[in-house]
Image 1 (cartoon, helix red, strand yellow):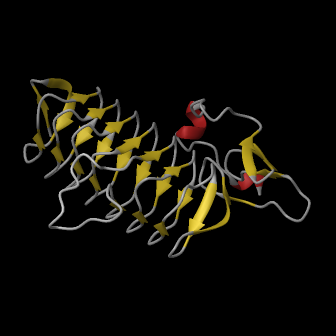
Image 2: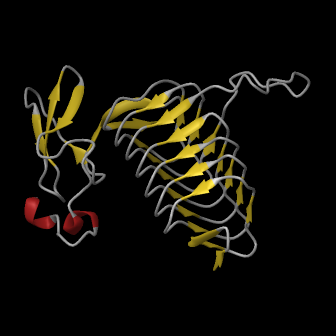
Length: 220
């Protein structure tokens, strides 16, 4: 890893290729064989694993983590703290044909803050993935995903709810509140919508909880 003169506060591996102009925030790390296209906008403290492609005009927020072998195509927007697992597949055209030029018809896909996409999952373009949703490995998502939703299968179906720390929330029967075993944060389910009662969705995690310093066993 080395500092690029154009981006002195960014670590870029010598095998990576960064087209200019583009924006990359301080503290971001770009590893082996990545390609960042021109006019991409990348925030601070992001991490891009090996063989990641970022397309033109893609917008990426702060503290985003992208694992190996992921392509983020034009039309995708990732808000802060999104996690993309290894080899997950993103798209930007619903009906691609090799002989039909659909440049300029790219569909928009929005990954809201804190969304997690598991390894080898596929995200069909033109949808919105809600805050802190959790898409399981290998799932194929074809429609909008609610905040905090757990999505499983092909096609992906809504099978439950997840906390900001990635633990399944148990809303049993008429119980409308559940507690995350790791953080102790309380969540409420109302009208098929989950809200955190102790922390606003736009508020960063407290440092001790974000660093994993607090054991969740005490909450079990």
